[in-house]
Amino acid sequence: MKTGLAPGFKLIFLTLLISIGPIYGQLFSLQGPNKCHDVCPTGYRVVCALHDGCLRTFASSCVMRMYNCKYQKDYRVIYKRACEFISNEDLKKLEL
Image (cartoon, rainbow, N blue to C red):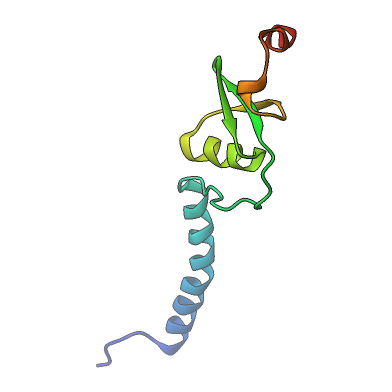
């Protein structure tokens, strides 16, 4: 009496495993945590961003996007300069 799997069944089983692998990997990557970028161009273009009434200066809009991704924030650029140089009149014009 033979024990083991028939050669045809082994081939079907192996083919099934090979075809499921990439699909499982794609599903797992969709369910996993967001992959945030960790590198920005070296250009230094300061921006002032706003989130929930808080102003924050970032070295660039790319750095701001990385921060938003990493800390699940929603800062948005309001000026292309450091927040420290924005006057109260400028802020009033934004109608925050």
